[in-house]
Image (cartoon, rainbow, N blue to C red; front, top):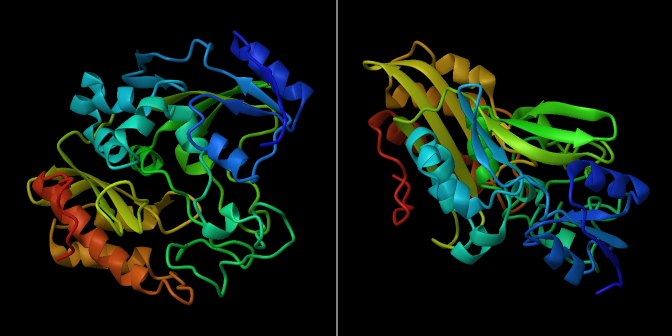
Length: 337
C-alpha cells in the first residue's frame, strides 16, 4: 500500500477545508470499499481524511420524513424501528446486501459512493476508462456477464453495486451535501451519473463536497413494496438484477407506482414514463409486462450478458406482483417464475 497522510477533523467545515487543501485526498469512514481499492492499487490517495468524529450519526424526524446522517451505519438504518415501520423497502434492500459485519461498518454516505465491482476496474493490468481515462474498456468484448444493459456507453459498461441506492431511488430520497460553496440538496435520481464520455466520474458531487445526510420524504410506501434481488448465489453477492417496487393501490387499481432497478446500469435505473404508464391501470400481470417492455425497450446486451434482459423483464413483473400482494421478497427465495 502507498504511504499516505492522515487527518481527523471534528467538524464538517474542517473536513471540507481539509479536502480543499488536497484534491487528491479521500474521505474515509467505514472504509469497507476504499481500503480494498487502496490494497489493489486502484486508489492512491496521498491523504486520508477520517470523518468518523463528525456529528453525522443520527436519524431524526425531518419535514414529515426522516433525515439519516451520512455516518449512520447500514445496520443501524436497516434495524431502526422507524425505518422498518415507515420505509421497510429501504430496510429490505440494505439487508439484501453485503454481510452483517460489513453492514456494521459501512456508512450511509459511503454506500452511495462505493465504486463499481467491474473485474477490469479492479485489475490494474487491464484497460479501464474509469480507473485510467483514455485506456479503453476491457469489459467491452471481454468478460461482461455482470455488466450494464441500460445507459452504457462506448467508454464504460460498468454497473453500480449498491442495493441501498436502488431503494432510495424508488423512494425519491434527497442527498444533502456541504462544500466550499455552501450546502445544497441533490435528488437521488441526479446524484449518480451515467458513464457517457467521462466514466471516471461516478457522481455529480462538486469538487470538495461531502455528503452530510440523506432525506427520506413523507411518502413511504410501507404496505405495498418489495425488494427483489437476483444473484449467482443467495448471500454475499452483488445483484445481476434487482428491483425496488413500491405501489399505492386504490382497490385493484394502481394509484402511484415507483420502480427502480439495480445491477443493470451505471446508476440505479428509473423510468418515470413506465411509472406513469402504471398509474390508473389495473394491478395485473399484463399491466406489469407492458411496463417491463417499456423499461427494457432500449436495453443493449454485451457479448455474454444478453440473458439479463429477459431476467430483468421477469424480475420487474414479479417485483410488481409481490408489491401489489404486499409480500416482500423472502431472503430465502430467489427463483424466477
